[in-house]
Image (tube, rainbow, N blue to C red; front, side, top):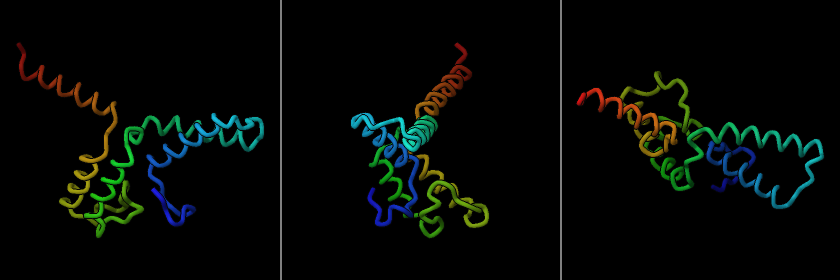
Length: 135
């Protein structure tokens, strides 16, 4: 995604993940000096951020998924600002129950939940099947 004013742009977790992953690869390839204080700080920030963000569902997203999500969110644009795409402030006061449900459906139907959620979902359905059919 290209933004006209990169200094004031809001980035999704996916975009941060991709930027830091690319930065890490570029540093590996160039063999930059890791001994300067500034470089060590950057390495630490990059490592810690990637460590955290790698555990979130954004790791399983792609540019196509993010683009599809942003396109789908345009139908909610009268109720949700661009900066609120993932966290809507004061939603109970601004949105009806139906609008909240529609918003949640858009999010869950497009964005992948990640393998942990899928694994938990499959485990829960296995348990439910065992309870229904005690053969």
